Length: 101
Image (cartoon, rainbow, N blue to C red; front, top):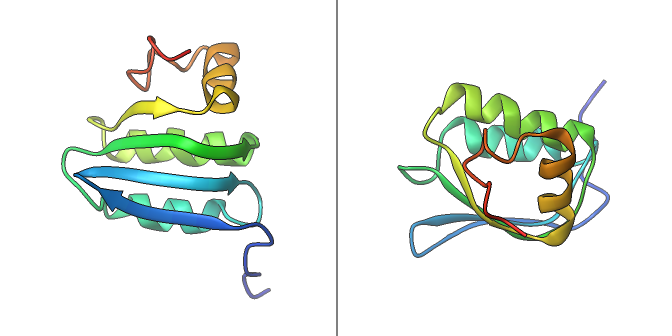
């Protein structure tokens, strides 16, 4: 089955050496995020997820898999939505994001 284009807007960019993700990371877009993070756009890989408005478990799994490939990956900032998900799942320290709100 061919991959479907994301149904929600997603922006992947690098600003001042920080990888920025904005939009929704879900079933329709997680494969794009995974591909982008597989060949890190910056080194070290620091992610700013302030623009992420929604992330489901597939999005979370995508980040966990990316961190396994790149153990220095860190989430340096995030939206309240992402921070709450990381806190609930206990993954905030795994991503170096223990001080996120």
